[in-house]
Amino acid sequence: GDSVTQMEGPVTLSEEAFLTINCTYTATGYPSLFWYVQYPGEGLQLLLKATKADDKGSNKGFEATYRKETTSFHLEKGSVQVSDSAVYFCALRGVLTGGGNKLTFGTGTQLKVEL
Amino acid sequence: NAGVTQTPKFRILKIGQSMTLQCAQDMNHNYMYWYRQDPGMGLKLIYYSVGAGITDKGEVPNGYNVSRSTTEDFPLRLELAAPSQTSVYFCASSYRLADTQYFGPGTRLTVL
Image: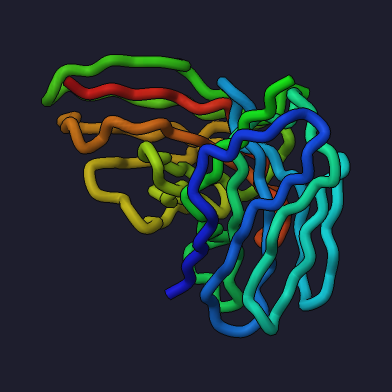
C-alpha cells in the first residue's frame, strides 16, 4: 500500500538558517503530494501541494518539488524564522484511493527555530 | 466562518466509559473525516462520510462509531473506552473528493 517516510526530528535551527525536511513516498502511479503544518495547540493546515511530476508547490517561503524519479517531495525554506516552529507532515493522496479522499501521512517532523 | 470546530479540547476517561467527540463545519462541505494521531505517528483515518446519511470505515475503525445526520455535524462515538484509544483526534472536511481537507484543532483524549 501507499506509504510516506519523512526524516525524524526534532530539527533545531537558528533563525535565518536553511531548512530541508526530507520526504519520500511509495505509491502506485502519480499520487498528489502535500505538506501540512501543525502549530502548537492547533490542527493541521495545508502548507503546499503538488499534483503532478515536476510541479513545485510554494507558500510562505516554503517550497517542495514533486520528483517522480526519486519519489521525493522534500520541503525547503531559505531562511527560517522562530514563527516557523511547528510539526511538519508530508502526505499523499493515492491514485487508487479507496476510502473517500484518504490521505496517507508521514510521522511528522518537529522543527524548532531558536534566536 | 469558524471552519471546523471540535469539542471538547481535552478529556480524561476511565476504562469502559463512553463519550462522543463533537465535530462541526460551517463551510457546507460534503466530505468529513475522523483521524487519530498517536505519539510519533502519522494520522490514521478512522471513519469518513461523503454526505449526510452516508458513512464508511477507514483504516482503524474498531472501537468507534459515527453518524452523519446533517451536512454540518459528524460526531465520533467511543464505546467502552480502552487505553489503546488514548490519542489526539482530528476532524477534517472537504467540499469535493479531491479538494483540500481542512482540519479542526483536535481533541486530546486520555483513557486511564
